[in-house]
Length: 213
Image (cartoon, rainbow, N blue to C red; front, top):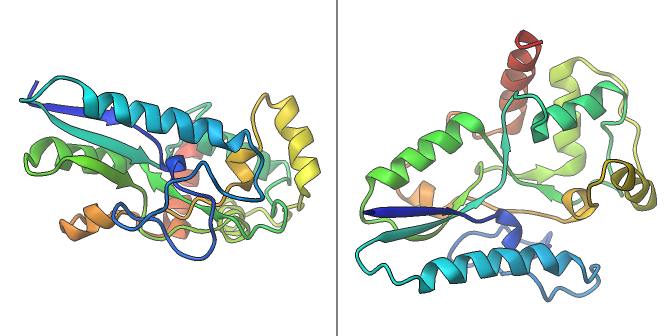
């Protein structure tokens, strides 16, 4: 094929608060101090995915690694459905203080970005698929509560999140790791986001979620 777009993940970047991670200056994770050892597992998977793609013997194929943040859509059982479901139950508060950054991308921007990457034969390598304005988890959930008209958002400590993750068969890395990822290459190429800010995206997603019920 002329182009090979391989899903990777924005979680390949390090857990950090100090600066955003773009493709040029971002810090790859896996060796951060003071984080659980198992957090390195998802980073290792992402590294292996990207390495396998890079080493594949396809000299005439353009390769793009899609370092995607959480893709937000109103579909049933997607990440937005889960987050809004918790929020509707009053559980949409800050987790462990809520300083950790949340990176995300609206489904319409994800599709538009993929179309751009298919069309642009001069673009290859890793590309961050994330909205340009990640925000702390406490602000992310506050905007979701406001979009849904929900007043109560009970906070949770880290150990409470561990219990919740156990019963949901999930992992607290998804909520405690700070993913501050920005789309450096997309912005440099002039890509225009339909939903660059989370509050507007949340309003759209909540409205469409309710229409589908």
